[in-house]
Image 1 (cartoon, rainbow, N blue to C red):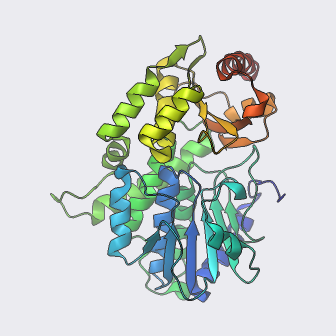
Image 2: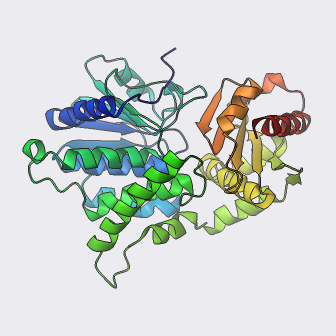
Image 3: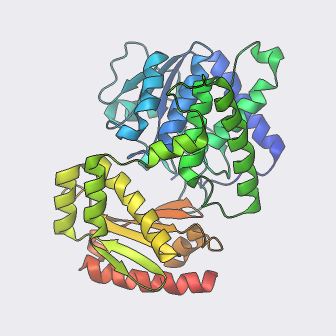
Length: 388
């Protein structure tokens, strides 16, 4: 077991880590970028943003994804294609070894999307492992090498990449005339920033809101300035948010079918999919679509309730031995850090942000998912009352 993630204690240490990572970017040649399984908006955006940064130094870059991403993110993949960034979904067809692996937006090693080839690469001590992530508390564990983990409290992983860009841009003696703030890089970073925080409405602390406001305004201004007027290209954070919220026809059907199973308690509105429903939805919609739509369902339930939204389902029935739970708080219910709820439940296999957590429970721990979820809801309501 690796070390649990902790916030970087000082600005000086944070800048030292940025310095080491930026040195590795200039000195190394071939990079493999990895995110977590079932990637969300911030994960995909941070993969693309870091890849674009590497392209500015003419590096060989490959992004690995376990499965094709949702249609809303096609503009990010189009950016990759335009910039010659390889996006791989299956095996790695690369004759030369990678010198560096970059792990982005992934709470712990066993959540990294990888295949057997990548697992072997992780065993190679000669390959540097860089990590950039904003997940703290819960069971978050480092995956990167010591001194190369930019892991800190932030609204998103893309915000940390933005911080890195600002620091690098202020060192022309090291990096020359590199344009760290091109339109596509600003677009990718803004996508992660607005997507993970839902345009900032799920941020709790003054520090979180300050940094969100600072970085979103910087990159929104850059995007507006560098987008040709009257073009059809995305030109603002509001336009980006509209795109990533849009559902395809299939996603909308999935959303409506899950919402039809809702239960409403005083502090929590929730959905519990039993084994039969989980198998039906996995078969009909596929794992990636179901996982991503379930997050949107949790968001909607939370907003409808005014406090919390919860979704429970069998995690890939027939293969996984777990039941997945996703808990989200509403935009107005900001005085509770859901990571404290996770600690109160004494569940170790989970983590997330102050406003959203996910956790898994083995199927062996429950005879009936509906009864277990109902009891869990009661326990969460008690804990929320204690935390308030």
